[in-house]
Image (tube, rainbow, N blue to C red):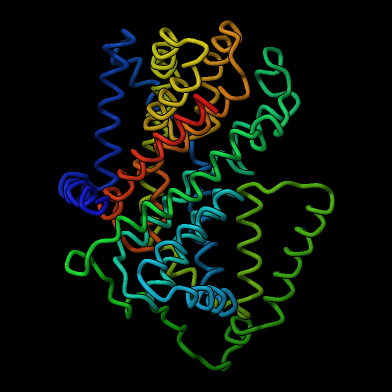
Length: 435
């Protein structure tokens, strides 16, 4: 029955969802007009907000590009390819492949969101090389696991409010992760999603006649061209010693970093991926060949992220994001505030797809409302966190690295993700409101 319900949604999205670049252009226009009409800002002032914010995600854009590139390079090493391929042998059927890729993505995303994005997509390709399964749903399943990231170990909102000196400390103090990430309601929610998301993906599996398969030959990595050591430069490019010296130096730094109590963040994930890739590829030439393959998928990140930064600039500077949040809070009660915090965060996330940026906008609205109503501040913070993660299912911003690795377009997976959005939205709402 779920497959029958998903089928028209998949066709609808495939027909009408434009390329993510067109989506971000349309979103830019919508936000521009809304800031003028709702916030009574002049067009020139909104234009200023847009231009000033346009390069606000430049550092983050490079980080995301490196998530794609370093993750691809690491996964294309003989060792990691072998591990993924062996893990893929656990799946003996299309249904088992869907469940397995979803569970792996859920675990990886709960540990770290950047790690989850890359591992899920690469494992989907490894499964597709072995199992005849609808490639669209396989990649959508890999991406669907990303929805748990903000309730996991790398959740930016719970980690922010657990850090002394955070910008809301004077209002709410420092809130331990035992009250957020490891709170009973959050652990229950994560556990329920670990069951529901793989099950829903499995039940959406199309019949053979409706499935879209990928040419397995296109998923095979092309080996680097062989060359001799006729030139001194060739000897350097094929030098195992050079790669090991630099690669092991990077790994030694990481060992020292974690020994001093360093935490896992996006820069460290990229650093880890890069230097493991340097060591495991063995020679600079093999690494550079992998880099040439990886960089081809990064065009979407390069061109689209500045437009999202411009949108965020308008949303934050014009007051539009705060107005949206205040509207939801205006009719909330102590019982319903977690639900409306979740819904408002989900809507704001469409326009401000950044957990930290979204918290900066919504915290000044949600936290005073929670204190005034006597609501649980920890639960409200996690409601915003889950809302931020929830609508990532239909926000192409975060899907770009996955799509680049898999070689698909947003319209190919978003129909399946829309079904997950509806079902996970109900589960998250119920747990936040009643548990």
